[in-house]
Length: 282
Length: 307
Image (spheres, each protein chain N blue to C red):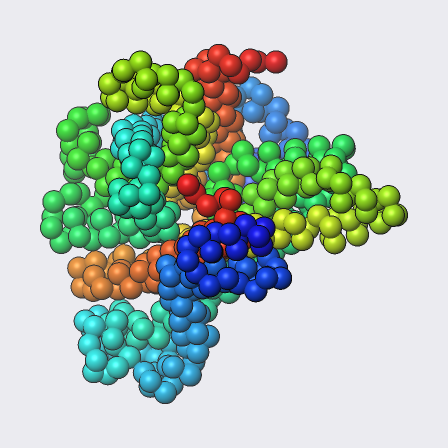
């Protein structure tokens, strides 16, 4: 770091290395880092010269706004599509949904984002082309913010919507052939209540296990989408830190995103046991 | 399985495949009748041929190279005059079409080679973990769980930022990050297969573990591995293009579909068409690979066909 062309003496260089702890052997650096983490001290960013924890806690809400909204939309759109695909299996609706999900998987997210910005932002001037707020406006979760959220949320939701219906469809088909569904029908329940109370309730259980995977999609997506839409979230911070070799920030955001992911897996398992009493925690 | 296929074919009123048809020829027979998969294969084949033939194409058809600049005609809209500008020209007047085909070379190379690497690692580790179980399995599973708890793209970005990548290093990095899916799959299948009679029989006559794994277990999972690989090549191409778009994958002047989009996004106002073509190429290639994967699965094992 800091090559000779700058006005830096070897002593300065050593002094800086020492103050950042970079002159220690790697295993020692690692132990020191673990010790800090145990005290929730993520160190200071090389680049911003601010505590890493502050940087990250500032960014997390911004990223969560995108992924939570995207999750909501994925469920709202994906669940009906999955049910329709299963109920109208082999017909035009089913095929259309299948094509939709293959296309949704194959389309590069960042390209979709760019096309969104190009057509609806730059050309139609309908949506903002990026960032979280209009210039001079910062009102938290207000109308302006939602207007800026439309682009990133749409693009990330499409990835989720490509996933969910395919899996739900298989589950619904599995449940439909169960005895209790036949019983429900034969006792004269309206088809709508059969679907809502008997089919959907049981078919959704395995889908709960999917949320970890969907969150992963959102994590990966946020890295790119936050760059396309210039959104100051965690993904953007990690990316910038990786490029500027700001190791403390990279380490911390790695750790935090991994912890979040593992927590979501744990939450998923708990939720699974909770919604399905047949699953016993052993 | 051949019998099953014959019954199905007869029911469909189709001519019977040869009575002794094996797995691969039956699969090929089914595949040929699957129009969507054949179209996808044809489109992908065309893209591959155009990419490999890019230098020839550039010289004979477009009469330019991927770095030849025409500073008087920058941001040219798509036109047939000169033929190199069918997809327009970029900020220094280079032919977008020629660069697209060269970009295809890079993207396809990275996609297929990285898939090959992850396949090799994945199959070997999966077989070993599933066959020997015990401590080896624990170590491998632990490694996979750790790797899976980090979002893939985060991992790729840090690796790519650390080792400023050439196409070769990028391929190795991607291959080294993506193998967990295949390993999990192979491990699960091996778990089930190692309890079957034919494995016990092989063991009884004194076959070594490696022989059992490679000659008896692997051939049974190979068909589905092909399916997974076709899909993985697509996923890898998507990842590579995303990395290159972020400026961490293939770096200019080597054109790749991803880094062409980085440039294009700076010229929204002057040349919107520059954004369309590279993305469309990625989309088309990945779509074809996914469709081929789906088609292969249906052809190789009709029982798995989504009902």
